[in-house]
Amino acid sequence: MSINRAEKICWKKCWILNYVLAFLLFTIWCFSMMWRWHPVVVYACKEQMIYSQPESNKPTRSDVLILSPWLAPIVWNGTYNSVILNAQFHQRNVRVGITVFATKKYTIFVQNFIDTAEKYFMVGHKVTYYVFTDRVSDIPAIDLREGRHLVVLQVPTYQRWQDVSMRRMEMIRHTSQERFINEVDYLVCVDVDMIFSDEIGVEILSNLVGTLHPGMFSVPRESCTYERNPQSEAYIPTDDGDFYYAGGFFGGTIEEIYKLTNFCHNAMMADQAKNIEAIWHDESYLNKYLLYHKPTKILSPEYLWDDDFGRPDYLKRRRFLAVRKNHYQIRNRR
Ligand code: 5GW
Ligand code: MN
Image (tube, rainbow, N blue to C red; front, side, top):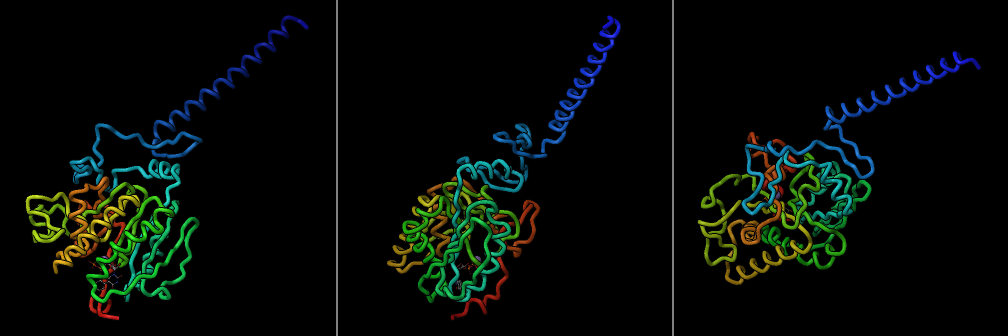
């Protein structure tokens, strides 16, 4: 082989190497640009999760309070990232129970309640619906997604509607020890005359959870409809109170729900012995409990809305909506 030919081959190799190098550099540049300009494009590869970075100098909401004075988050749209939260709760393989009472004519709400929950409630997580009813045969068979179950539990019929509402505390307390403690990690306790109309996920889970009442949002403490009779176990003086919590949505771990329902039921029984009933029934006792046992997370009215309260600017999503009901037809006996 002549020297000339050997030189030519060497040059050729150098060119190929240059092309390969240029191609590699270009690919790296492409990836770095994707990384830089598309931080919201989220994908998971093994242990790494890519999502938009929290910005330390930018508040997520400027129109509403998102942290209580005892540092419990108040959950509003825009304040959390579902990608991160879902990964955390999947890692823990969390099981969620949701309790709902449907006695007498209120069984008509069950189908829509569960159908819409299948679409919006804790999608992708393990969920058990606990339906408490005095009319077991009225509860329809409903197709559920994978990992989701329906348990129907028989309860007594109470004639007074106030008792129907209040006895929920006793029955949740009882079932916490009997079943919930063995079957689920968190419990969500809600009204049945509702539909899910937007996502509700693991952002609501915490040790003890209360929800801001849509009709009492930002009302001064002295004007809140707490129980004002000092003889009642639900009594709250006018110079006390943080928020007014809704009776139709509370939650927490089974241990915390046991303590809450135990307090509320015992307080109701003590009042009954004195011939007293708090102004807003179970809701009044719930407010008393949550005032002196501060919730670790608070849900904004997005999580319990009624269109009777209109569409204020702060409300970016309506996730759980009260169903309009014909009070006379639905509430009269039998
Ligand atoms: C019946 C008559 C008057 C008021 C309540 C009832 C009733 C309530 C009933 O017959 N059966 C029943 O299962 N409930 C449960 O109590 C439902 O889970 C219902 O969502 C909850 C609270 O009663 P609501 O929803 O009528 O109360 P508001 O304050 O949401 O209107
Ligand atoms: Mn209701």
